[in-house]
Length: 360
Image (cartoon, rainbow, N blue to C red; front, side, top):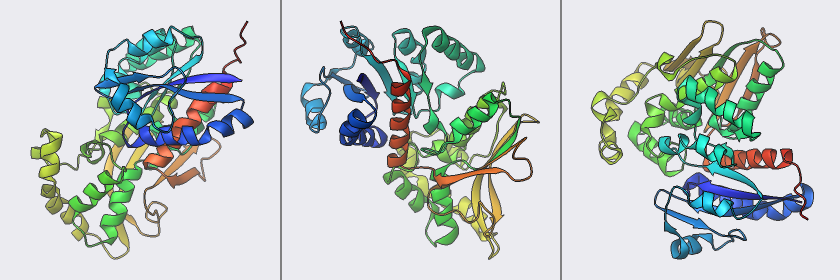
């Protein structure tokens, strides 16, 4: 039996859903995978909690009553008291936390993340992190960086590792924006109202501008570009920003208060649609020409992208083996449940790859 200690950063929509999924599945993993998952550390931006035997169903109350002011080394000190496999799980969107991944690896932690930022910092940071992981023989899993729980990253990675030349990856990279523009193209509802409902349901990033600015899709493009073997920077990406200039530098609260200012320019997009057309937010990665582009486009309703429903993501992968007819991956591309399940799958992947610890 492999005992896995999980240290979770972020207790919001995704983090709390992951906790629920782990607690509900503990027995299944013990019986069927010989893996015992224990969430022994919880942290948000202010507080931290460590529990030697792992948290239970009452974790929220325990966190309120027993958590202490967060210190940078709190998890490290606790981890030193045992020899279990330790996995740090990042369910935040924190740029600051991303920069600490090398330190986590230095401290002996595998890393699982839904946070795209670490993979989209400088190429130097990207390469140095992987070199460190290799030296320490530790894993870094981030399937949920693109497409939530859809197997996009692994597919691109495996094709590239097998020697397959990847030509292009196109599609609706954001389930969040897919949901927003599916509704906006079909319903007579203000754009701002749809965005706020998407935020409430956990489809968008905590600050919806990460989605609307195109930055979130751009990061996904960059993740896949680097998995395809390209050496590129975020600044190389052509991005169409859907946030009006005055709101791009406002605080998150100010943006929400003034979000109706987006309605007029987005309605202008919609007014130009023909009866057989819809709006789709698309990402285009041209590996051959090293071109990455994010933009809002008009597509035909009967096209593959035009037929998407809800928060579905849609990816077309063109490569040597899939040149004439692309490899297509489609499915729920956003939402706390599918993202948390993707994190859990990555946790199990690492757990199964670790040798079983035997105790004397």
